[in-house]
Length: 385
Length: 222
Image (tube, rainbow over all chains, first blue to last red; front, side, top):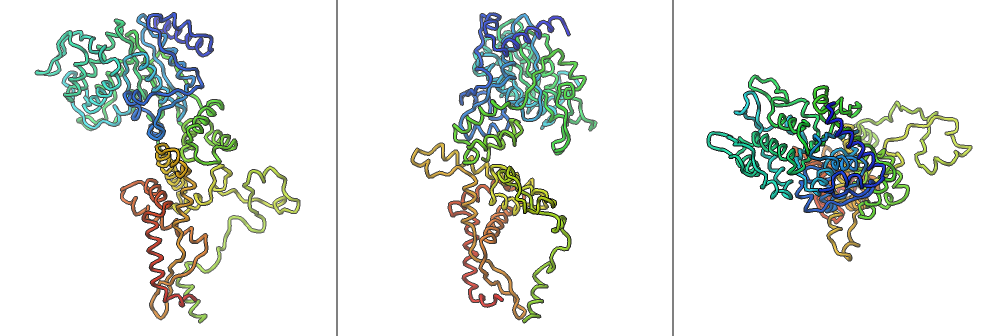
């Protein structure tokens, strides 16, 4: 562990512990007096994300499908503040211009809220006017590549125009709250994308984004340039950046991209994967990298009996694990009884539990135990009752 | 007459003998208790189960609070190739879709209209199946070399079964070649049937019409 990183994670841990102990929040506000972060509600309470914000943050596609359906039905996004998000928020509070980026890995069994926590963190970053780099799933970069192009910038690299454009559009949409600020940040040097297209020095970095969106064949390189500029400006304390990558272990996983000789390309050959890995490195300041270790990368979806692995070391593999070290693991767990009750009461209040039996005391207990306190199955059971 | 009956039985039934082998020997096995409240009480001293074996509980008699005999039967009727789990997922998925649609309508409605909207998907399905129940069935009866479609009266459980079968066949035909998902079309049909509309209700009325037209064959009921 590098000494600097050690210090950073140590401080973050301390903040997290203090925060979790529920002592008080003065320490955090002292540590970051000039830009005091808006605070999350206490663990165990429900909080609502306003609909226009959810729309801007593209929650419909980023949340798990059952929750995004719920969002359409109930017409609101209400999530439970649980310990992982409280810990993430306290780590985000510890971020400042003298510390290298904090790397957090959310891990836990299936259905315990890794993705939801990630999205809550994105919302928290929005509330605090951070820049948001949010990738819906790293698996899209490795397994769902529709078209490929060989890079003209580095030989042997494979560009992925459609995913790059999709990412840039998403970035533009999610960062509308600081779009003006991004427009004031200037590029460091000339970027020569092709013979005719250029972005000159001292132009706003939003021009890079617009360039990428309008010219798909340049988009992959634009992503790299954008990341480079964001890292530079974050280090210069112009803004804070949250990098939220779902299924991040797929950056070291299997790919379905074929090279000319019909062999599968390793992920390190994909331009976007390289750019995202570069973003995870902690050689820049004022940022927080939040990753999710998800078993989809390694598990067989049709295998219902096998117990799959879900710890960061097993999912990231040795190479990935070494790359992301040092990091803070944050475990997501099943509901406690009080948490499941909070959700149950919310459903009752919204009249979402339609059957008489589910609204009885017996129904409440059965819902809890039939789902084995797993948030995913709890929602599934409540969906038809 | 008797020879005719035997001929009929041979032709119509796949097997005219009762099953020769049962997993549970009826001399030593008894039905299990699956009601939770009854489980808490001690067995009656005269009960066979004090000293005999008890059969394993059926997978659809687990004492969950959302147990519903109609839904269980629908799951059984919709099962294909013995994949009951898949079928259950489909039917429960359809219930979820029904609930979501009704909930949206309910949330939009004014306070007075809200009273008339049922959100409970179990209630809607029960009502839908009830509306789909035919009064008669048609069965082929061979007389003098020609097979006549003869209307027969049916009991309530069979009517329920035939309603479900009609519903299932219509949904399966629609879901063929991936046009829609089975659960989507099942949900649409159930909501429609609960308001006496839709393809299944139409099929039921067609059946009634044919029964009416074949009234003259009624005396072939042996």
